[in-house]
Length: 255
Ligand code: UDP
View 1 (cartoon, rainbow, N blue to C red):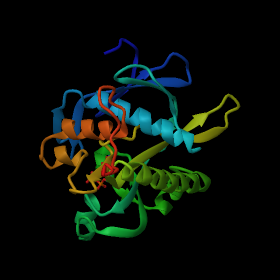
View 2: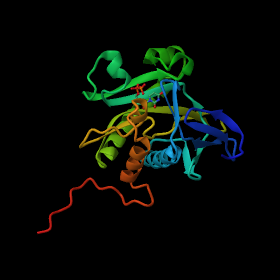
View 3: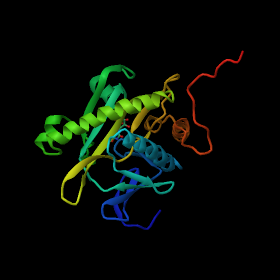
């Protein structure tokens, strides 16, 4: 690990001071945690895979016009990103029922929602990241109304885009969690940037043909094969140098 000053040591990433005052370095660790870190393991190589997957997805999201904190990948485990003030709300976008909503509302796992559902959770480990609503966000000034509207809109656009992208490699995007931050320019004004990471640690991805889980639920539910599944996601995205890009198209019959 590098010798730079640690600004924050998280569960799956460490944030180091960047080369300039408006940047930081995200270092992807191999730690896997679940149930608010009650369950913890080291999965060799997970950080390298998540760094590559998040690098690829953040770049694509930038390309469709959604501003992100991402600047560039530095090496196997590190990314240079813009330093932001994280808004303390996790945005979860759901297309299919899985995870906490199944338990909370008694919905059958796998039920497809008629339209994407957005939920908000307060980022507070001590409280176990409780579910909150838009009124809480405004009332307690976790974001302004304009910021909230913008984050909701970004969440839905990211969902549409990622659903299509994953569909193209035979994966269903069940749900995902995103975070945003305020990036301050020299004049003191701020803009919202998509921050954190997008990887199988914070998305649920199911194979279209087999419904096999290819995300962190393999660890949460002790099903095993997490690294192989993340490798497969990276392979299908075409970002593992040694493998060819995955094609979901059936080979044409040669007569
Ligand atoms: N998620 C996350 N970090 C969290 C909680 C959830 O990245 O602290 C992601 C999770 O991987 C899933 C989505 O958000 O893709 C919805 O998670 P859910 O609310 O179902 O909670 P979980 O079952 O993970 O406790």
